[in-house]
Amino acid sequence: MRKPLVAGNWKMHGSLAANAKLLGALVEGWTGAKSVDCAVCVPFPYLHQARALLGSSDIQWGAQNMNAQAQGAFTGEISGPMLRDFGCRFVIVGHSERRQLFGESSEWVAEKFSAALSHGLVPVLCVGESLAQRESGQTEAVVGSQLDAVLNAVGAQELSKGVLAYEPVWAIGTGKTATPEQAQSVHRFLRERVALADGEAAGALRMLYGGSVKASNARSLFRQPDIDGALVGGASLQAEEFLSICLAARPKD
Ligand code: PEP
Image (cartoon, rainbow, N blue to C red):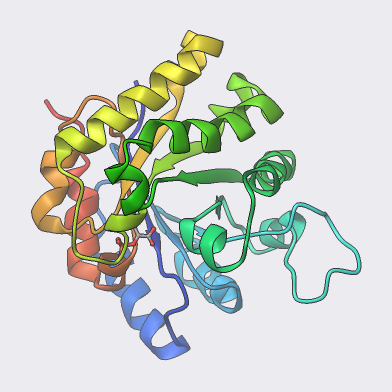
């Protein structure tokens, strides 16, 4: 049985004052930890604050990126051991904004995924196609090759220690959500691809949907058999909305 996970991706948003309010409201309002894992991935400078405010709560925290090297002359970068120093459990790797805006290749993302595991972090691997790729029928080829880069690098058993997030690029921050059927179809494709390597690992792998998830559409997405939660951008900045999405992920009775 896969425990659902809802993770917030704050992107480059927040301030000490705004975070204190948001995290305080999440801690006060979160009651579903027995059946759902709830996490927030905050900008690096706020990891200390996240640890201080969430440390004795049922909400976990993480980062949005990391370098695959443990240390060295990599000006401006942050390593896995540094994230562990701040109590991070999760780290997002291969978000489409990093792939598109910062030129991250799938091979690079695979190195980060592997390094995250070796430092005791749970990597959340993002894959997803652009609108043009979807419209030209390339969705499975694109997400398949993004997945394969990591699968070939670490193997299915290691992959299943992380989390896979399907995030169609055309649905991120646009208000356009994939229909539950569209999302399920890609999730099933991805799980079947992992199952070709290892059925048990595929069955254990948590797979999140991401792309304009809101309280109003979360439940129908979570009803799909291969969707085990969500990676939430914009809506994770509003406590009530984010808590409603987390609660919607409670397993169907
Ligand atoms: C994201 O940033 O991963 C994301 C899914 O954003 P949004 O929910 O705002 O579409």
